[in-house]
Image (cartoon, rainbow, N blue to C red; front, side, top):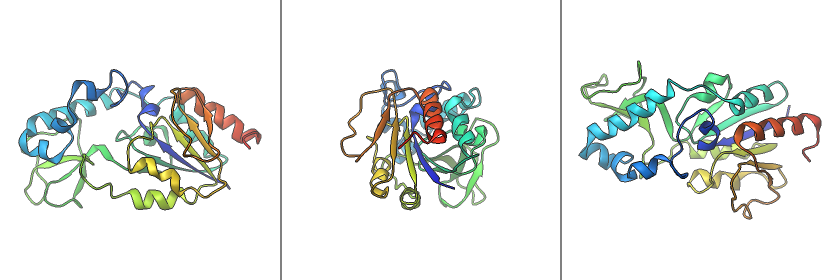
Length: 231
């Protein structure tokens, strides 16, 4: 069974109603990155950081997986599908994907501020001041903030190198180190990019672009792969 490795970004969840960060109208137009997505911000204005992620988490409970998420699940009937996501939502899991690797953390989880190995599922959408880990320290969002190491990158790079088919959905390829994962794909491996925008892809040898939104584009790719017209 051929292995499809899929790298997903904010664009795949946008069709579920989750706001992106970098696009026009995205969250970074409303918030300064340095105020809500760094450890320094957490230390200086914990209430603001906590409220920012509480609102993101609250919204996540209100949305559902979309056509793109379900198309990837459906591909598991014919392929070994492994997902590497930059997203912190759980829409891939809720759709039913069997193998999901989160690069930047998970919104519905929290962790200790003194021991990164202590990670917990948050009960509900609200993290509060005074919610402590078993060692007595304040819990923080289980999110990789700017300036923090992306510890899953080596595992993601290894997984990317095993792909028989590599698919990129809804990501600008501007955020490193995630954007560099395509560099680990074996030469000659078919690479597909699904995104409606104009993107510079000259650095990706032989990439085939499906210029559609995630849902429609993923369904098109699935049909191509099953019919053998992808090569």
